[in-house]
Amino acid sequence: MRLRDELGTLYTNADFADLYPNLGQPALSPWRLALVTVLQFLENLTDRQVADQVRGRVDWKYALGLDLTDPGFDRSVLSEFRTRLTQNQAEARLLDRMLEHFQTKGLIRARGHQRTDSTHVLAAVRRLQRLESAAEMVRAALNALSGADPEWVRRVAQPEWFERYGHRVEDYRLPKGKATREAYGLAVATDGFTLLDALNGEGTPEGLRRLPMIKVFEQWWAQNFIREEGRIRWRRGDELAPSGERFNSPYDAEAAYSTRREHEWIGYKVHISETCDAELPHLITHVHTTNSTIQDVTSTAPIHAALAQRNLLPEKHIVDAGYIDAELLASSVPEHGVNLIGPTRENRSWQARAGTGYAASHFQIDWDHCQVTCPQGATTRGWYPTVNRFGTLEILIQFDREVCAACAVRSLCTKAKGGRRVVIQPREKHEALRLAREYATSQEWQALYHRRAGIEGTLSQGTRALGLRRTRYRGLRKTALQHAATCAAINVLRAVSWLNGDKPGRTRVSRFSQLAVSA
Ligand code: SF4
Image 1 (tube, protein in one colour):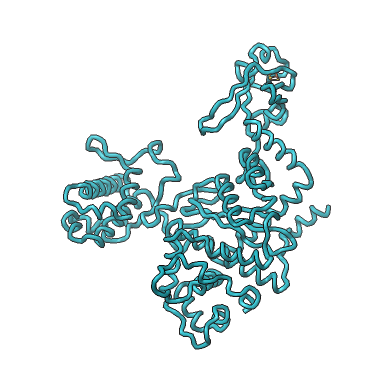
Image 2: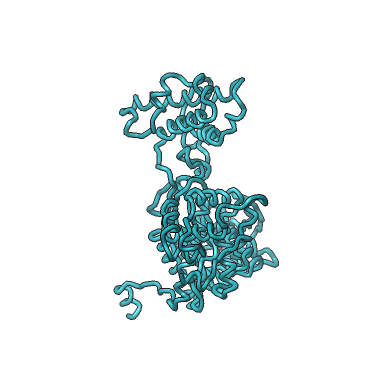
């Protein structure tokens, strides 16, 4: 009830007008559907439970502005509303409009401090062994084709397929023993190619080849099998597609296998950004859902772009080392006025790890004259701008072979037979990285970076209380919608709590750690 009294309806029909045709009225006001969706994720309810709550709960009726006698709606309208959002690429709108509303209420502002971190998200599909995947792919393709053109399937299907693909494929039901499993695998592979040949044969309706499941089937088959000179075999490890393009289940081809420290999972990754200023509630400003194999560092620029679009860019953005590289350090200030605060990745060269060796940071660079001076006072023989295998510009510095050969401290500097080589980034990146490393040694930086820990609490709230850890739906877009709705729900909880006079909790320090702090 406090939500309605203090924050109003949060949404208006105009916020979603473009999702509906001009003619005809939607069954329920779009603003109510939007608010119901947020309340659904706030209480982690199913569609059926939501329909019951709307019918039976006074506080929900009050928040939705419904009469006490209102009969509510059929649960299917929730699914239709979500489909409208995803089909119109408006997954983020639940959060966008809420943030605009909060800005007008003065609960959130740009140019403060924000922090970002990510967590893994499990897909709504089971993890399959490779052999299971192959058989399940054929089964899923046959099911899709049977729905679209049963007569065609009857003509093409071989008698043993009904036995082999009639039931869900599970590892414990598959043949035991290496030889029999290999024979089973070959039979499945042959079936798959037979089906593909039939699909590509003359007289096959074009529509069958265009079925989404058939596209998935073709893609997985090409990624995993090779047919050469009439023989079929599995692809070897070095012949497989990059991990980001591979998938495991026919039912969610966007969910990829990934690992992170001790976790391994099939699914997605969600990056959450929130404000962390003391004088305002800590509200989520952006949620970014990606394929699980995407590196955190590639999400930093899209997060800044999205925050710029919402006019919610921070002045200081606190992140861990995974979100920072030299290019971002150099570009985030001129492009967005955002200072990235976080540890930079360590120099992994043996000289840096040895502690006593001469790493690149020990060399003096004269950018104006393209010259580098080593710790022993020798100057470079060559300065070569080059492009590395990732397509990134860098500069190769070469010292003279004779000078290095005569150097008394050569063992601290190089193991190469020739002169010392040093690779440095272009000037803007190099300087940005150097300044960031220098700043990271200050107490001011330590105090700022200390704030980052609070985002762990938000991830914990999302995963433990609001079901963020596991997707309800299949596919990246629907998963992104779930995440936007969940983060909007967290914002409602926090805004209402703030208006009730509760301040955000501080990051807890264990009693034992407190002893170290006070020692
Ligand atoms: S090995 Fe060459 S580059 Fe390294 S310190 Fe000695 S002279 Fe300088």
